[in-house]
Length: 278
Ligand SMILES: [Zn+2]
Image (cartoon, rainbow, N blue to C red; front, side, top):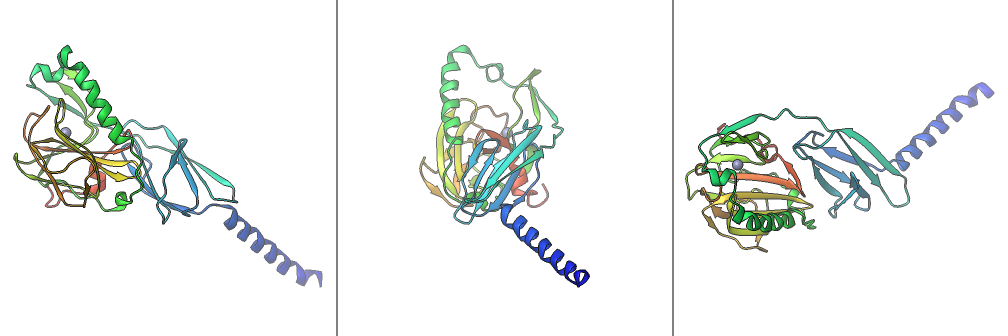
């Protein structure tokens, strides 16, 4: 009698445990790798509260969220997910290190490698404008779109390389460069709201920042002509500017950078290989 009842009791207990576990663990999924320069997309119950390293993340109405890892992020990250009435799950991840290359550029005008003292104030004011644009946490879901290259051509500079300008080590290259002639149409890599449109910044010349929502933004620089204004709503693929070589550029190209708030991430990972294998 006892022998026959035990297995069914055991099964009932197991079932209860399993359903309890499924109930207690907030369900979320992640797409992407935990690596320097990478972007990770997540999905959770829209009512969940999600944070990465203490920063609370916006969720779309469907429960989508995004975060990214700076070129120098790490060595680990903590993701916390909780749903109303349920426990919180904290997961620790190792952020994989990436071996970045070294890029040497010679022959730059000396005043662009070491800006003269009289422009320091201008540079600081422009840095504040750019930082404010990257700090936006806008509840639009364009960040979920598949990103496209703002221009097509030969990739002449990659993300993350340490730059040595005229022999002086400088900040890493935080974008991907596409060599195209001046006047080439530059497309919005994804939809969003124009967070900054400045025709003449000291380092980057003609500069447009598109806010794709949830902290993810694109910057395109060295532009010869801007075709949008701050506050404009733009669609993926819309022509937002013409390329050029304004600011600190050694030749005509489009520099495209992607940010998750202040974190520099690799735009190339979002757009995939350049069409035509260039
Ligand atoms: Zn560049």
